[in-house]
Image (cartoon, rainbow, N blue to C red; front, side, top):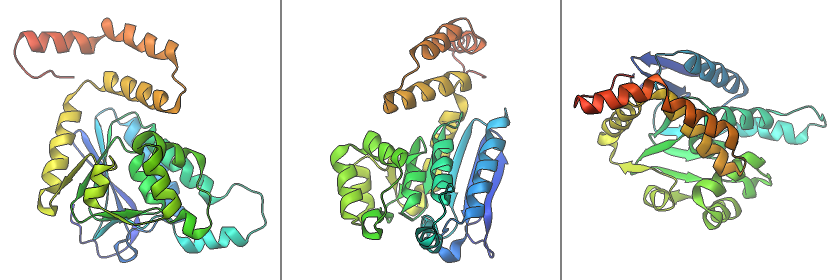
Length: 261
């Protein structure tokens, strides 16, 4: 799919073989997310997870940025509202949490700057591959915003206490090499190598055993939250020992061929 979309639209889904790609598509506004985008992202996540042919999801943006985060005009409108009803901020947190818990492995293809809430959207992915010209910042402290708890948890568990404090409390912008150093990026590549690196990782993930990956991803996420369902993880482990995936995996190794899951 080309990065040169002419008109802004809600997020777009493309499925090609075992790979699904969701593209944020408001390039003139650096893929700034609006309320309707959150609804659409949730719908697309459901579609991806319900399709048994999909083995990996890539999340990316159109144009020169991954995303500028959530629309600040909407943030300002919520700040002046008196209603106690759940806000769009709650909806944004729900979208990030839904992405984190998606049953298939996820890759964030960071094609440029990643700012505000979109930094957490990227962190909710399992892997983040970014161009060497990318940059990021989390402006919550500069806006007077106390960030939602699950977003802070993702920063702390993925990046560590010190890096989470540095990013949240200073609001300073950091470059791609620093993003790589602190573990925000899984890999950093030149722009011309971005698709090749994303394709390489997506191919590896798509070829692995989907049930085993889904179960281990769930356990890893639960470990990170300090809420491991030991009984559930143990049950999935024991089921895998007598399941079709391990039989195919062992047979393929004995026959010196790639497994067909």
